[in-house]
Amino acid sequence: MKGRGWMRAAALLALVLVLLAVPVMADMGPKDQLTITVVNPPDELYYLDLLTPECSSYDNLYQEEELDEQMVQALFDAAPEGWGPALAGGTGVPMWGDLVGTPDQDGNMVHSFGYVGVPTVYRIVVVTQSGQVQLGPETRRLVMQSSAVYDYAANTLRTPPVWLAYLMQYLATCLPTVLLELAVLVLFRFSLRQNLALVIGVNAATQLALTAIVGTALLQSGTLSAWMLQFPVELGILLAEMAVYYRWLKGHSPRRRCAYAAAANLLSWAVGFFTIPQQFSWVVRWL
Image (cartoon, rainbow, N blue to C red):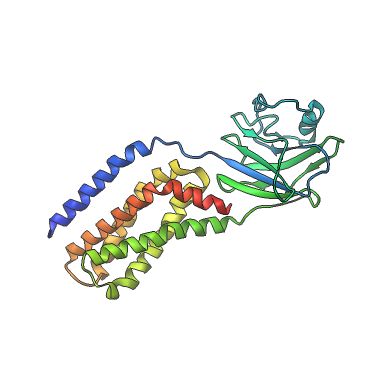
């Protein structure tokens, strides 16, 4: 296949990918989740909720049974002006959570909060059966799903470094992309030795852009947002790499260099598209 034949094949592959993508986009993806691990927890029964300035009445406790009404009221009373308990009071939209934690194997207590009502800005509030009340520091969630460790005795909150998640997301896309594009380079019979540094350098740079835009959307908004942004970003990357390879890739004709750029990018694009849910599941483990 020569000349325009390579371009026709690349265009056909792009059309097939778009058609395959349609049913996948119907998936709404994961929802917000925050897991709080309490170390040095109280030695008595306690409730833990998230205070938030985003409060708006919503019945999130309809499935809860045998709650201590005085302790629930204490969650409301502990809230500073303009704040309210997210689970006990609501944020205007559904949210599930655990006022009473679940012990883990290390003797800590784990509280999970999830769904669209999980607040972006929150403060931990703890009320005990004996009437003690404690408020944690104000914190902002930077990603859709994450965890935090709350030391009740020291009243400190520790969250995982978000930069680590972005690094993992970058590696999750960059390394497979480099390997795929090098394999396609060999299939197109370009010299691996002469073009190795160029292909690695170009992909290292373009994957930074992909992480900055699509990776950020994936971590902050989930898979649906990442899918929606991936098309224009990957199209821009394809055109940029085509221009670079047209000029600097060594060997064969300019048309063949462009054909290689199109085929390599479409292949990595397809792999990236269909593995976005797996990327999300892997990256959030670091959070």
